[in-house]
Amino acid sequence: MGINLMAVGLSGINAAEAELQATEANITNANNPNYSAESVQLAAEGGPNGAAIGVNVIGTERAQAPFVTGALNQAQSSQSYNSAYAQVTQLAQTYLAPSSGNDLLQSLQNMFNSFNNLSASPQDPSTRQAAITAAGNFATMSQQLSQQLKQASANELSTLPALVQQVNSDSQQIAQLNVQIQQTDAGGGNAGALLDQRDALVSDLANQIGATSDGNGNVAVAGVPLVSGNLALTLSITGSGGSTDVQVAMPNGNLALSADQLGGTIGGSLSGANAISQLSTALNGFEVSAANAINAQHQSGFGLDGTTNNQLFLIGPGGNGISLNPAITEDNLAASQTAAGVPGDGSNAAAMAALANATGLDPSFPTSTLSQAYAQIASNFGSEVQGAVSAQTTAASSVQSLSQLKSSVTGVSLNDQLTQLIQYQNALQAAGRAVQVANDTTTFLITQLSS
Image (cartoon, rainbow, N blue to C red; front, side, top):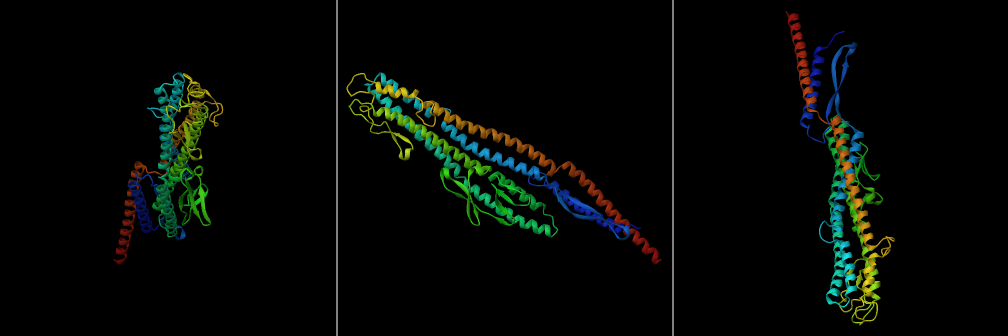
């Protein structure tokens, strides 16, 4: 049983060259976070009658860690979601409870204090004007806060079109890569670079919208297929304001995806905007409740001019927003509970001041005073913000740990690659010497036979 030294040597050269190419590619891409290390797969080949004829290069294998990759994408989705949510809600929180200056609660307390002062000096012009000013400040503060929250929500929602466009672009690229990968595999080529590109795009979709992949290029969002083989569906924005959603263009019509179905930055932005909308609704209920309670008491009193049934605040259309009644003056401000002209009667002003300690004025908080209701609204919102910040921190820690774990499996170790580079160079030289020996032996035998 002989050995075909020439065939063995030539196959060794082919194998060593393939291994050197893979190693050089690994070293070149060592700092590429989207690159997966590659290795050459070899198999021994036997000839007729058991004669060895060398080694075959089966192909190039790409390092993979599918379970770790899936978990990493989920963690990245959570981190992006909570980052977007926390960013916009933290901004809203600064409006709700500014670090300096008066907030809505302080303006409410100032108004009740001015009513108390009015009860002690009901006929003093400056005291009467101070009460009107304090009531106007409360209305103005409520309007400013409402506008700030509305603008914060609108600004966050304005980022969605660009994000959705990026999702559509990624999806289309994945569908195209699926075709290229299939064609490359069918032709026996190395699709490693294409697979790396696809994995990077899937990771981006996880960050953007919480998408998941089955590892074969099929991508879904909230259980809805976004990419199936070479087909990519298109996302778009539907609705506006608090009713903004993302929809998928399905073959039989559009399918809306609500904020609570989505992850990633888009899900966080939608949920954050919705949280601000809910906060605005709660604050509007609080402000209107306060205005209605004060109006009811004020309308029962009398001004210095003898008029009664005057509203201190005006309520906006549909019960939205409050403003100071521009018809209120020092003369018709109702500090008295009796007819005009009774000196020193500040009983109605005292009754308005006493509303500060009344409970149940805001029906959403039946056992709380207005101050306690506002504090509860702020506390509830603050808890949501803190929850998002905490979740973001946890997700960031998971991303770091999973990234390190994935890198240990799919990443490139330069020390290992440099060691292998030397081994493959030595193997190439050895195979070359084997070919040279086979060639020299053949030449020698031909020379001897010819002599």
